[in-house]
Image 1: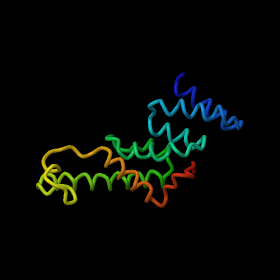
Image 2 (image 1 turned 60 degrees about the vertical axis):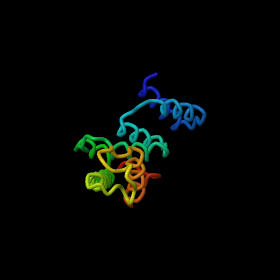
Image 3 (image 1 turned 120 degrees about the vertical axis):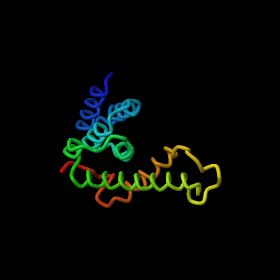
Image 4 (image 1 turned 135 degrees about the vertical axis):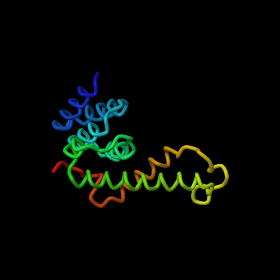
Length: 146
């Protein structure tokens, strides 16, 4: 089945209180790659809290800038928080690259962190999640449309 069909099953099972069908749909959707904004939309609509942080993190880490269309789909406060987190990540990335370029390593790390090694994507993801959790306006447990 396509993700749109699974989303419909999830929405209906949530609306009608069919817990087993809801859990089955969530498990199926978990296996499908989906646009982070689409995942946020269905997570909000069907109250699937576990999808929010990973989807917001993906938005923070994507290479393309956030757009006006993204802002319309998110509420203004959420959009501003995501922009703030993206800026914080960019600053950390620039600092890390500068330290590597200067041969100082990262946070006192040894010689293995020197040179042109790429930044660790798992560390970037962990930093993004940490920054997102710190955003006061970004309640990951109760996000809703304005």
